Amino acid sequence: MATKRLEILAVVFAGLNVMDLTGPSEVFGSSRIPAQERRITVASSHDTVTSSEGITLKRDMSLLELLATKADGSMELSRYDILVMPGAPPADVQKAIEDDHNLLTVLRTFASLKSSAGKDRWLLSVCTGAGFLGTVGVLSGKTATCHWSYLDTLRDICKANNASGEETNVVQKRWVDTGRSSTGVRVITAGGVSCGIDAALWILSELYSMDKALEVAKGMDYDWKFGKSEFTEGYIV
Picture (cartoon, rainbow, N blue to C red):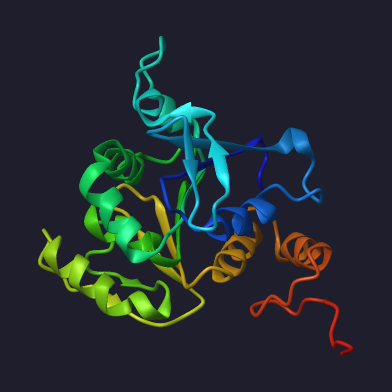
């Protein structure tokens, strides 16, 4: 069970799919979890970014600030428990991979952090966001997923960035517990868009309990495919 405030970091970039961000944020920021027990911080290379849907988001912190060393010698990035990496239309993901070097550095650095006081860190990609994880080599030798239309692209990315020589097994699933980084960071990859909710609920079940995850799913009126959740069924047309 989580015993201190849960620090969630969302890394955003131009063209992101907003539900890739807001789905997990709804789970981790649920009213079923007291406000003093969780905080979500949005970080970006730019002061504002516009999603593929046309929604403008303002950052709380720059990526360079995340990489800065604090007075106590620790890195600002090290205070976060969960990093959420949303996806976007493939062209926007590729542009960010090519142009946003600080984004890749943040991901690579977070994946190399050690656990804090024996507490797991989590790196969650949603949809095509797995492309960033593949680019920094986090998925080498592991099983991962992404949006169904991006599966072949992710395979190509992982093959091109496979320093370990171990193949990445890319599968179509709602989410995959991809394993741990070399330093023990837990890596979770989610399928397309809404799958980020499923993956976030599962992470919540690991951090708190299955009962808490089901409570949050019920509050969201969401048909979670993993646990036996209660949700509103049917429609009238």
